[in-house]
Image 1 (tube, rainbow, N blue to C red):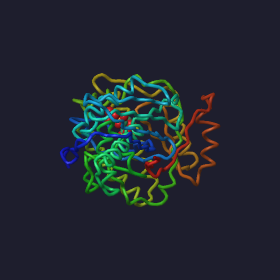
Image 2: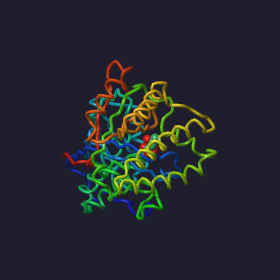
Image 3: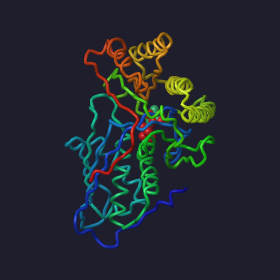
Image 4: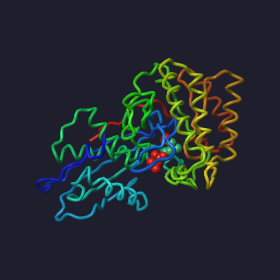
Length: 361
Ligand code: DP6
């Protein structure tokens, strides 16, 4: 698939009435991590994630008639307020996709968005934000240009567009376990869009993810800067190989209901991500002492009790504790009494396996 497959059309006649669409889209947590990219958002390695259920972005996009064509200048509202910094990222994203949606210069676009999770929790999610926006743009495109796509084609196009906004966003367009990036283990996988991993044992659909909030502050190094530091990284080649192998093993584990392999790969990937950060030329560390304490406790407790728990991290200090529905009570006790004992506000976000985005208007 190439970009030209998705090049779109201008409106043949000016818009007369405003047109609104709304989507709700979830965040996702990567189990095999996307880290490093080239060209127009092409990942260095394939990644595999779990689409979540509760951490959602709701976005409404409204196209208004506009008298003269001009540059793309979206009116961007986040949580009821105009947000200049994120608005700027949205503007440059929209400018970069006028080949796909040429009508963006023929309308005035208002984008209103809010998250269902606390934005103070340090888990601001570009995945939910850009997937919700991409879905809105594809819906507007369908209505404005009368383009008829079936459900699968529509989601694929939305995944393609979401990727151009934020790599991880392309995976949120699909439910459950999703793969982005060309992986030998999965025929049909692609660097341009995510695809769902369909062969999943029912036990993995009972997966829970509790985010233990260690630090709510903004990260000192953004994901985008972090990706850049993979360019010329001394371990890049080995990392690409390792990701391919981890995807293959994780796909087998998902298929066979093999929790122990799942735990091993997921933790290996979290450690690898942070090791790559620390060993890049301009090395940096996003884990806090509390992150390290919690990780150590999760590993110790697993050994002591045999609970099927493990951790993963994204590009930040907060710990994602993964476990299964049948052990929810024991794990909850553990979270309160041990893992969050130094967190006076008991800050956590309880999430789980999710069914993907929903059109809400
Ligand atoms: C560590 O998707 O946020 O969470 O493409 O620059 O927007 P951009 O990066 P982003 O990177 C996510 C990195 C990660 C791993 C992952 O989600 O796979």
